[in-house]
Image (cartoon, rainbow, N blue to C red):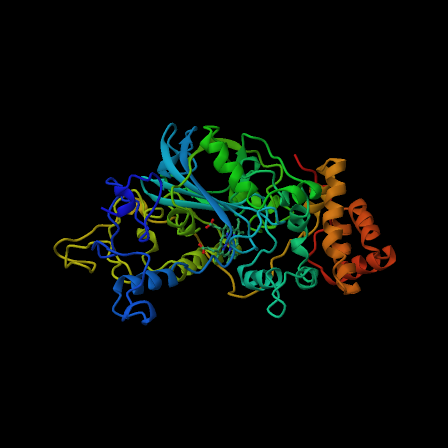
Length: 520
Ligand code: HEM
């Protein structure tokens, strides 16, 4: 026994770091072999001698430490995860055959909340949309609803996503986020006006992850057992109510306040809950809209919501890296009854997430406990780094006479007609400003004032008068009062703003004139 323990000195350790407690587990190497020394490297020739390469325990310890990080997510790097359960509360078999929506059925979930632009470990109060990603471990495989707290997005085509993120991330020269760069991008991206109006409102700084709604943002195609399609949008409504912070409150928020709040409340048994709502629209309705139904810069305003389920988060993962960091949500993880819509952003995301995860975590990312489906995975995908599938058959091909696997007609995806020219072309019915105006007009006076202040704060960093004027002209097109107040707060002459508005409207024939669109 180590000498100190023998002497019975409680709570002390000896020179080797041992407490000498009889119940302490034996320290081992990764191969399971017991270790005799964990504080002093093996040297040749006593105190003055060099360290030996043959100290396998030292080399393994350093080598494992050197490899502790996987690349952080290219976006949404700062996140917090929790487990829970989803309960379906309505029979919606008329619109989808997805098995998780049988009324009363419970499905385990893992949710990861996140900021978007700022790196892992950044303060949680920084202005950003917030990620709200849910993995449903259904009895027909995993369905990932990878959404945000805001109901719309900045851009409407995946081909622009890398450019937008480059403009928002730190400059490759100074390594600092710079409003000159991202407003340069947004001044050529009028469809971002709706999202910018949301992000610069206090929704961009939530009081708590518990007090945020969540949105699938895109339209998805739901298909029932008869193969009939309908388009749908999903929204989580927080039962805690939506609560945000203003600039002064954010300034005093602690670095980790969102995680502390979520984990603290779950630990107290005060489990947060959300209602899952769905909006539906048949294709026959599309022609009546003054926007494209698959344009993710638009909400489906005035389309009623129906409640279809409830979610409770009740479990804090016991290892951050294993669960939260290695969790891999992908819009392409769909289940029978839920299919892609033609939304051009969604279509790009179907590729991008699974692709980055094969790189970020590895080809066998879906075998990790947090990502592993709760049903058997039966296919011929195999091998790669860290494969744990333990395949015990040599029939790793399809079709095969023996040991074959089957496919089922009931799981075929829905069919649809395609016609017309293949082309890379902007959508018609851009209607870039009306919904931003409707959102602004629905804000309370104090929230309007905060929005103008938050936006002016970043716009006033911009040195290009042209960029500033164009940005203010977009918000003016959304709402005259909004634009006028912003022009004043940014010292942009109203005459210049009006000129920019006229120029825009003269050169954008697709623009549907902002109407008196109201929020329900
Ligand atoms: C994370 C790409 C648009 C919500 C990510 C990641 C990528 C990505 C590569 C990192 C995934 C990982 O490493 O696991 C894209 C592309 C988009 C797009 C290419 C557009 C074409 C959106 C939109 C939303 C969204 C519109 C919201 C509806 C999220 C969320 C995460 C995420 C919540 C974090 C998921 C997590 O917690 O692990 N995105 N994104 N993204 N994205 Fe997007």
